Amino acid sequence: MGSGVYILHSPTIMKQQRGAVLTWVIVTLPFMLLCLAVVVDLAHLEIVKGRMQSTADAAALAGAQYLPDEYTARAKALTLCNDNGFSPTKNTITTELSQQYTNGYEVGIARDIPGLIYGKWFTFHPRVVATAIKGPPPCSLVGHLMPFAIINPNINYDSRDNLDPDNWGKRYILLFGEENLLIQDWANGDLPVGDDAPGIDPDYSKNNSEGWRAALRLDLSGFNELGGSDAFVYNFLNGWPGEATVGDILPVLTGNKAGPVGNTRDTRLQDEEDFSFSNFDPNRDYAMARVVHVPIVSLLHEGSTTERYTIEDYYAGADWEHTYVIIDGFAPFYLLTFNEMGDVDGDGVAKDKDWLVGYYIPGTKIPMYSETGCEDYGVVTWARLVE
Image (cartoon, rainbow, N blue to C red; front, side, top):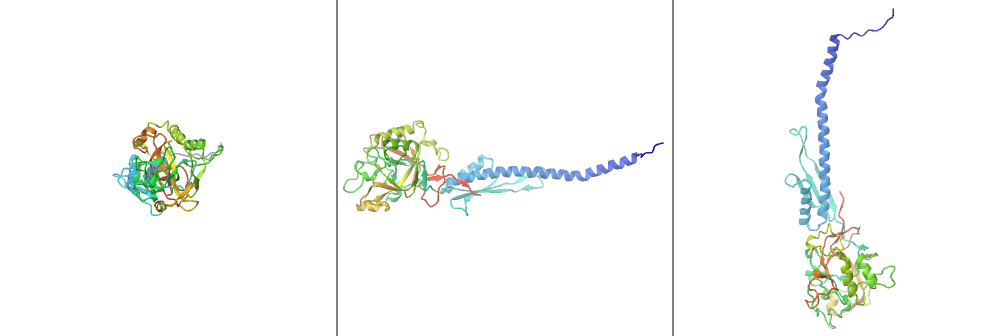
């Protein structure tokens, strides 16, 4: 006869086993549910914190673009927060200048988040912070420079024409028409311009003041002449491809470029004739053809390539260098079409198609890196996050 092992499953033993399993389930199930609740709540918390951080980042960038105007910076930051579902009424939103970074803007978002499972018992209190800085004004421009300039109006005696944020949308003459002159008396904002602008003998009217020329002789590889008509047209349409740096000495142009001025402006703006300035947004439209980056320059003393000619020198009757100017910085302008310019000629009636007139648009961006230590005439680089 064979031998073997027989396991008897009595009803009593099976009942004991079922009881042990049931006891284990009863004891561990609440713990398992608690763990699941914690996992769900933490996952939900991380999702909301991610949205909060993304919103704070975007709001800090939006606000930094408008510095040093803190009022507008705060308004833009709060609007962006609200548009992304974080309204100031339901969230604690703080906006302030950064204490750590110059030209920095900080946005903080805090909110109460009840737990999904144990919302009545526990509430999370997350807070996120983001800091962005506005890029410093550019010390140099690469591929953006226009072949015309205006004399720095910030160093005259008339603050109405200064290049500062208060003059947003103010009309400035960028090129003076038939003789390519800069407007006299260091002012570019008052229109119309009379034939006999303020000055001393000899008469510094628009037609014989060759020291105020606006056209620049920017060299262009491939052309035989320095700053000739072909080079002027190319640079106007495409931006001078070279690099212009604050402190550079630029040659000014002798002669009449009236034809290229009007024709080239019309060619550059032909696809944007119907765009209204009331719809212009510097954070959205900075790359449109109407936006031009104009060098802000100082005159030099006659025979000098280093000594700046001041407004005091002008009224003292000293002469200036008629062949070169020096770059002080750069400023953005919204170029007007022939029909939009209005009555800007010397007699206040005629429309001169060869003039260039633009609205000053401080705060308009250029996509480039810039060094620090340059005066800001309204051109800013991209804002970037630092924290």
